[in-house]
Amino acid sequence: MDEMVNENEIEEIAVDEVQYIVVKLGDEQYGIDISNVDNIVRMQRITRVPKSQAYYVGVINLRGEVVPIMSLRRRFDLEDDVYQTATRIIIIKLEDQSLIGFIVDEVKEVVNIDPRTIEKPNFKLDEKNASYLAGIGKKGDSLISLLDIKAVVEEKKAV
Image (cartoon, rainbow, N blue to C red; front, side, top):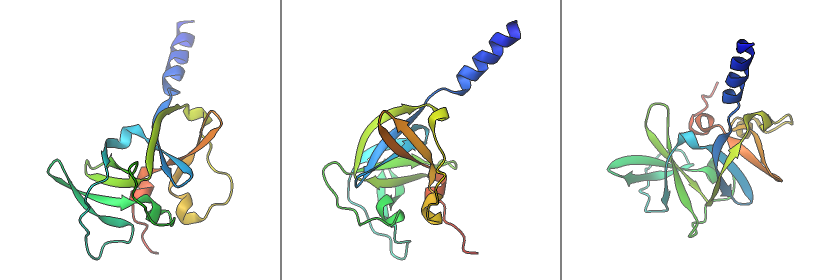
């Protein structure tokens, strides 16, 4: 009987909700796993870096560290960024502990999503953009595209 209780406890721990920061790009909502987020900063002066990929807008100085800044709009082939008062830079800490910033139109909220309710897209997406998606999360009536941060940051090698 004791084994049964322990199994249930383990299962409950495994299905804890995951926190996501919900950001907006245009009319779309995207979720970024909060465990990847180091900081959220207001828009600031970005120093351009010549000859970088089109979606890298430059670098900023954050607490003495040079951080590359990526435009998620450009990365996803959306219309270009228009900086507003709500525009923010989400600072992401990568696995190797380096930092990268994503420009987003607005940071909406932090939501808890049960991993069991996350659905993998089962419709045909354009392959480049599909690789950025970890799944679709549901919060109330809203659907949130959950980003695979590693895929967003990585360069696909040309075959």
